[in-house]
Every structure is written in structure tokens, then in C-alpha cells.
Picture (cartoon, rainbow, N blue to C red):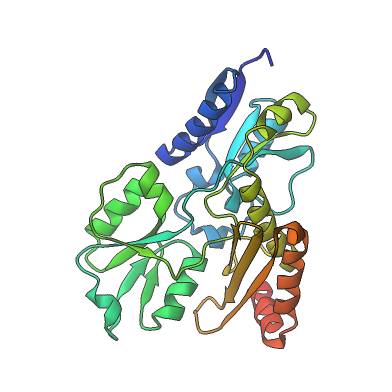
Length: 306
């Protein structure tokens, strides 16, 4: 490829870090790249909670238009934010190895409040995190927290009412932030495809696709395909508290999922284990086990009403 590959990124430090990661990997294979900064709708409107926007592609549609208008050659997304049904003419080019998908509780003082029955307040903009917190700690109060990582940390520090806030562990690690008061939430399942990157380009750009396919991580591609396939079968996006995680251990795949009501009072979960060679069937098996429950179908129907 003779031309310089134009890679889109948002202007946040974390988005730039991710785009730089992709740029470095492609350049290591002998291809010149440059970054192009573009604002998404989320960057422009940071006052409305994401779930109230009710737009599955709020993070990605600006990038899709830039690809279609030939302003860029590659768009770098967090895969959890990508719609399960891709726009026409745009395709997956590359999925690198997944990073740590776990979440962190960053607290202001100590964590004694987690062992008490009294109410405490946690901040997060994610409905999924909110539902799991309320399920584990029914007395908790959850308040919305938006903006970029540093602004969220500042808001936590300056709000005397908040005990803690939830952040993605990889985001904190990638920004090399030195935070003392943090707790890894091993009990909290991630969003489908959380902390996998999705590198998109136009379907007609066969040369670029070939370049990216050489550095795709097979296990990450399989696991995220299972997680997103499960979400597709349920016909839901990022605005519903559905969590999914596929893990490959040698030739075995374990797939865990759960769905909760937004208030955390209802929770349904299943675990499926299959041979790696059968990975294309796992999403359907898990979805069927979920949908055979009348109470789960009722819960899903309630989300549509809301």
C-alpha cells in the first residue's frame, strides 16, 4: 500500500492511546499512518446520560460517515459500542488481543461501607454497572457520572456525597493513573465485547483488510463474536443490562451471561461450556436457555415499553 493510512480517533486521551496503538501495530508491518481527530455526538453532548440518548451507535455513526465520505481509511472503536448490525459498506478489518475487561471501584476513603447495611452512593453512567451494583448492594444509591476519565475522577473527588465510582480497569491502566484507593470488581461481568478494539474500514478496501487480518487475534475474535452474537439474537443493544463473557481455555470455551432489571431486583444467569470447534453454536444455545424462561421474556418486554 503506497498511500498513508488515515486513522480516526476521538480527542480524548484514551481514544488517542487506542488509535496510537493501532497506528504502531500497522506501522510495524511497514505501512505509514497518520491520526485524524473527529468529534462524535457523545463528545458534543456530554450532559445527557448515554442510555437516555437511546442511540446504539452514538459513539460510531460519526466515524461511519467519515469512512463513507473518504475522510479516513480506518476507524478505531471500542467493540462494545459498535452496533450488532453493521452499516452497509463498512466491515471489520481487525480485532487485536483483548485487554483486561474487569471494572474498578475507585473509592474516596476506605471500603468499610461495602460491608455495612447502611446506604452509600456510587457514581456510574452505565445501566449495566448500576443494575449489578444494586443487585449486590440493594441499599446503594447510584448516580450518573459522565465526561472523560480525568473529569470523572475530579467529580468524584469534589462530591462529598459520593463514596465511590466505577471505572474500566484498562482505561485507568492505559492512562497510567496512579490511584491508591481502588478495588477490582471480580464479581461484575463485563458488557459484551468490553475492552476489545474494533478496527473498521470500507468493504471495498481489500488491501487494507488483508493488512489488518495478518495481526488479528483469533481467540479475541471468537470470544467477541460469541458475545455479540448472543446480543444480536436477543435483539438488544447497549441500553439494556445484559452482560456476557466468553473465555477460551485451550480447546474449551466457557460462556457466561446474565440479565438484570434496572433496579437490580431481578437477575437471570446461565453458563455454557463447549468445545472451541463449536463456537458458532454457543450464542444460540445461551439465547435459547434465556428465552425459554417466561419471566425473562417478560423482563425483556418491559425494556421495550420503557
